Length: 237
Image (cartoon, rainbow, N blue to C red; front, side, top):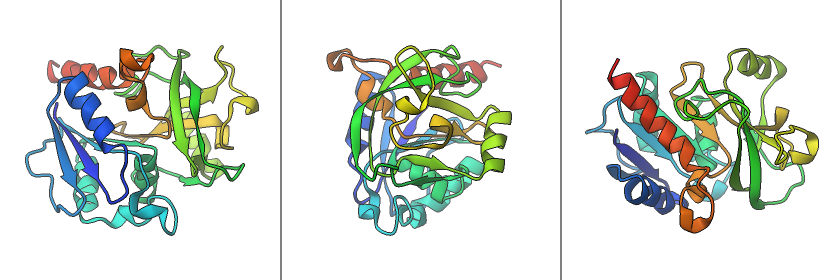
């Protein structure tokens, strides 16, 4: 599996992601400038990553302009053909703006930027990025956002639950999901979701910031390992 990391003006987690994928995980990684118009050299066996940051300065609203960058047309087509697309923080916002994932990310309910470690409860292992993680397992993953409050209408929220598309919920260290563990007012404590086809994933916490022993936390690496193992398993079937 090869990875492509899209860089928008204002991205600031692209180098972190490239380091984890390339240096830590020893995978082939290609930096993709947002003005490119194709994903030549990538197949649907590969993964395109939209990293965190503040694309276009979050003007209008987070992800609203980046969604119209030239490369996004190719990313949308790639996703529709079954390729993996993984959006983290600002990348999650862009995926919602591009309608590759349902719902929207709104300004935090407390109206402040929040940067801290959070605990996430793994809701399902029925996705490539959670396939190797037992449901109910608690991970410690940092967040850093001002517009991370996931919102959708009740019908969409119920569909996400019925289809097992909620990947992670903010929780207490013991796995309790409650209002006190919710850092931004997000609906149902949602921290990450996938699409119905299970090839597009979005989450607000940053697993790339918790993927090395030197940082004292490797919980985030479990997501990348799951993705790689899932792809290898699919290739042998």
